[in-house]
Every structure is written in C-alpha cells, then in structure tokens.
Image (cartoon, rainbow, N blue to C red; front, side):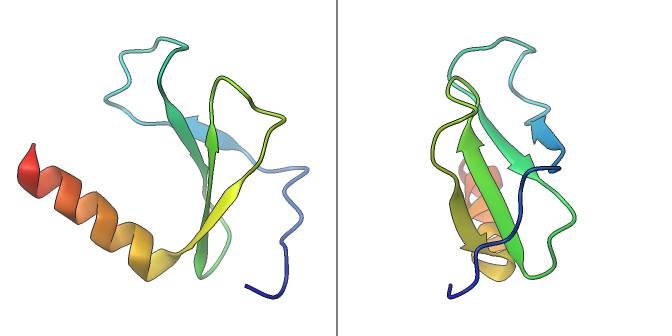
Length: 67
C-alpha cells in the first residue's frame, strides 16, 4: 500500500466470536473501501495491519471452513 488511510476516527469492532472479553482479540475497522485495517485489541494505540479487502475475505472464509 502506498497511501496510509487516516484511522483517527475509525470505529473498531471485535469478532462476534470473541466472547466479549478483552483478551486475545483482533479488531477491524469498516468503511475503508478496498482495505481492512486490523489491530490488536490489547494494544489499541499500537500498529495497524492493512489488508486488501479480497485477501481479508479469503482469510475469513478459510477460517470459517476449518472451524
């Protein structure tokens, strides 16, 4: 990625499978066309990983297939 999106106003959400706890969760931010920002819920001010939306969809699909 050449452009880093402004995530200062991003609304982060945890997986519905996270049991509502604060441990061992990733959060994603919606509303960024073509990319999916992902961060560690335990370190919200830490680094954010950016995935192409198609790659993230393939990852989620693969996880669901093996669960």
